[in-house]
Amino acid sequence: MSGDVHPQAIVSPRARLHDSVRVGAFSIIGDDVAIGAGTVIGPHVVINGPTVIGEHNHIYQFCSIGEAPQDKKFADEPTRLVIGNNNTIRECCTLNRGTSQDRGETTIGDDNWIMAYVHVAHDCVVGNHTIMANGVTLAGHVTVGDWVIFGGYSGAHQFCHVGEHAFLGMYAGVARDVPAYVMVTGQPPEPRGINLEGLKRRGFTAEQQRNLKEAYRVLYRRNLKLAEALEELDRRLPEQPELKPLIDSVRASERGILR
Image 1: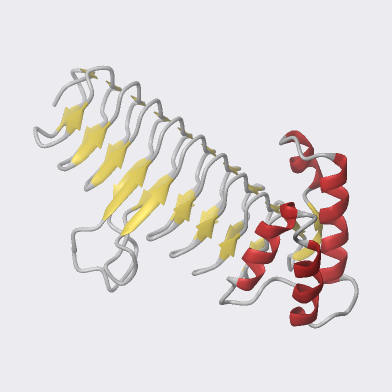
Image 2: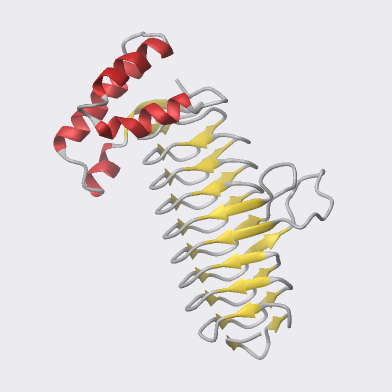
């Protein structure tokens, strides 16, 4: 044990904290928890292990981090949660460890903005630079690509994949995969186009944006069979490499894409 720990916090002697870690009052850090440099743990946070938390994260009050998965098959196997660097995790979030039935690990990448009351269930894989607004819920085994944005109270069913740069609007709960770049809104959720605002913010050129808009039309608006749409997009790929994440996310889908 090390770090700047409030006297009213409890830290297990089996936890490993960098000297620069700060732990607020009434927080509890359990066995087999490792926390990297510059991370701030607010008051009233509970972190159980095995959990690895990287550097310069800020975890706000009343979060439950690394607790056992909410899975009836779980029998206290040695699974874990791994959180990267520079993440903001706001009030009352719940991030669970993995299960032995899957990869045994829940993984959250770097530079994610996770707002209040978000739940990330067992065995999820969350990439980098994502935003999850208040009340977002990821069921078990969900994969989220880089730069994805979830609107408030949106979520994903078990085993869904949400491709990079996708956008889910408020209350949109998806039960199929969302391809890269695609914007989904409504109840029931429907694909509405390409996430152009997000692409502009991330430096995609006007030409790349046009190419992706046209690729969306091929996939969603020309009444082509999925195999035919993919053949058309493959022909464009050598001249339009930005299409690759879209094509790959469609081809990799096991649940079927939202279409």
